[in-house]
Length: 178
Image (cartoon, rainbow, N blue to C red):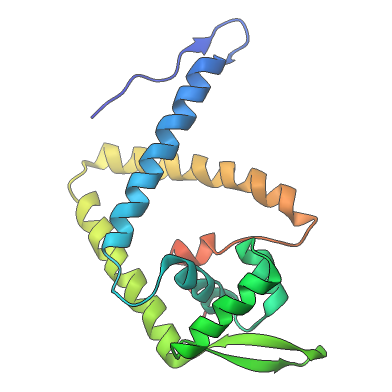
């Protein structure tokens, strides 16, 4: 389905504010719908919040709970509850923090690694099946759009760089942590 491009304000050379707002709305709704479809492909047994945290640990390696809280943009108490649930499920273990004797790190277990790998493979297989239905031009356009989306995300990463925070976008996009 092809949709018209945003109206451009010829005097400023930039999209008109209403068109930019409409584009933002369409993008947000499309990404929500895609996210729902991808979650439907997930194996049962791990809520998206827990999976996101586990994916961060899989991608970055052993993390202090405070670092996990920053990465997930949650309070320390929420990171502790997430760690409790991941540990109870056998997907992560707590270890002493070598830099802080009072601190605790979270590390992924082999079962946790299998969960992350399985979930990624299933989601990627479903999505790849849909992408094969596109023609070469559509796939190139999608690749170009992903470059643009990566740039949009960099704006947020740049703002967070001073705070030393980021998220698991790279891991969730399928980049290996090993």
